[in-house]
Image (cartoon, rainbow, N blue to C red; front, side, top):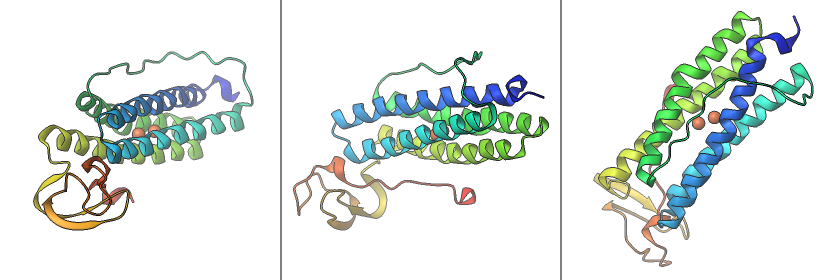
Length: 198
Ligand SMILES: [Fe+2]
Ligand SMILES: [Fe+2]
């Protein structure tokens, strides 16, 4: 069967469009974080935005390899357009990542397998695992941002200045770095990850 007649062909195009948009939404959220003085948070969000852009690149490349260059691909799909405060956007991102990790990409992988595209199914599964970690990170960031625990913790933690590398263990990060004078927003975050996904 011609590849362009398969569901997997359309799903790659959907995945490409979705990842491009996620990357852009996160860039906008990172900019918002930057404007509010949360530099380390902005860097984390930018790294995730870069991940999404590279997922888009993988899907684009896979589509080209299997179907060749196309002038036009018509897809029926819906994409999130929610936006709000920085706190809202972190929550929206966690919800979107969860949907990608638990519904969208597992379904794309299942269909790809059914259609006999094992290697493409593997790509969808690999991306789903990354999105699962993105969900965990955004979920943590949203909760920590909301309850003020981004830089204040129950037990002592090692805080590191993202600018000069100054380190100190305490329950709360400094407001102004004692070594270089950088603001609290530059202090590196304590990000969680799912060990089973590694
Ligand atoms: Fe992605
Ligand atoms: Fe993601």
